[in-house]
Amino acid sequence: MSTLKARKRQQLALLLGPVTLFLGIFLLLPLAIMVVYSFLMPGLYGGVEWTYYPHNYGRILGFADPEFEVFDPVYLSIFARSVKIALITVALTLLVCYPAAFQIAALPDRWKNFALFLITLPFFASLIVRLFIWVLILRPTGFINETLGALGLIDRPLDLLYTEGAVILGMVYIYIPFMFLPLYASVEKLDWTLIRASQDLGAGAFDTFRRIILPLTLPGIAGGCIIVFIPALGNFIVPAVLGGAKSMMLGNLIEQQFLAARNWPFGSALAMLVMAVVLVLLFIAIRQERADQPGSGHA
Amino acid sequence: MFRHLGTKALLAFTVLFFAFIYVPIALIVIYSFNSDPVNMMRWSGFTLDWYRQILGLRNAASEAALYIETTEQLLAAVKNSFIVAFATTAISTVLGTSAAIALYRHPFAAQRFYRVLLFVPMLMPDIVLGIALLIFFVGIGGQLGLGTIITGQTTFLTSYVFIVVSARLAGMDRSLEQASADLGASEWTTFRRILIPQLMPGILGGALLAFIISMDDLVITYFISGTNTQTLPIYIFGMLRRGIKPEVNALAVMMLVFSFAIAFAGLYLRNRKR
Image (cartoon, rainbow over the protein chains, first blue to last red):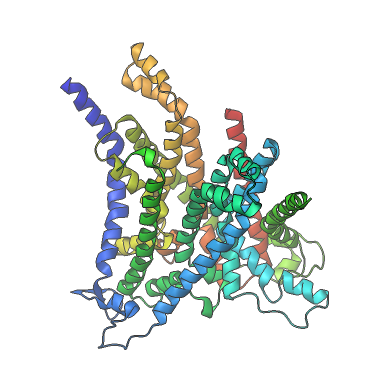
């Protein structure tokens, strides 16, 4: 009997050993080093000094190193802008996907599968290519300006590209599938007999929506919002391609610290800030999910 | 009456929804054949020059306006992308599949830990993993290049494979395995002849997903690729930052066709399996 157990253990080690080793070295260790870096003093010519230095966080949160600078809320405002852009992206994708999910769920099977395929298809296309499309559409000699100009509606090109609006548009475009799929999963599961019952009992459309449809699709809404918010918050590709100097986000700031300013500890501290927001969100989401499923036991 | 109007409005909205996704794509496909070299969105005639130039087939017209950096650079980027994608797919498929099987077959104490560990890379913003890997690779004195790109991408691709294979395992019929064991097959035989074939669609699906994500990864690769190694997304990102040329448009359309072809192939395989 004990040999059987030993064999099982051996199998388990064989199956899990490589992945444990790999993720331990190339995921957990780098993350741990990043945490340490965020508390180290930046060296004069890049690199770090191995002394404890809380002012990386201080530069962001209000206790900058008095030897070098006075506190400037510029980093806080970039943080606030990133949160704002990510939230607007979440709201817009939700607004666009929610009605579409209902329509698609109501289609006959053949059409439904085709529609779902069309929504997931862009996920296969390169992200950078999908953003490039919007550069061609929005720039001064882009499709919109050329069309409006040819129609005689504008005298000179509108400033569409390199704006915050362009960044939001790009984000909405790339995150639509992320929002749609979890939403759709809960819309499709919706029990329509409940809705009919509510209507039969005399509830108006708004009441039925608020009391039946909304609560039942809430898990999908919450899931979609989180799945869009997390990558949107730290995104640096979209603002780098479609945004201008005034629409800089946390991701751009982090990239700068690593590849241009070479202040890695400060960059690490900024990344920790992004992680902190993400972790808080996930924590709330997991707790909520547990509260919603009392049948699954307590853990 | 109002209800009828509401249904119509919803349908119209959904049509617009798809238009928003696909009209931009249609536009760049159409205008990639536009011959105007400066004003790319003002139609002035049909041409295949930009495609010729991407493929390195020069002609008199393109010789005069040699916009694209060098075809060699592009080809090097394409080659790097394929090397990275094949290598990461192979490694992450093995790692992700073995982790999924281990967690399915042997319930054990640290299961929760592994599930969290394998979810972390998917839920973490790309940029955080990118800089953590950069600090690590530079810290251990590694030379940034193909090796670091492959290693770095594998850390998060493993999670994708794990999730796809786990889903397949969860829906699998265990009775076949038991029957095989009851009939006296060794564990290894059962593993090789029952578990793996049943699991194959999941493994292939996970591998395909890993391949596509690897080909497209920009953020993590951007931080750990160093100055001398470019993959295709990084090459295009660089071009976009320096200014837009008609050749980029042709290149973008070719990439779209390639990725859509993969998507269709995946769909075809899945439908055939049923």
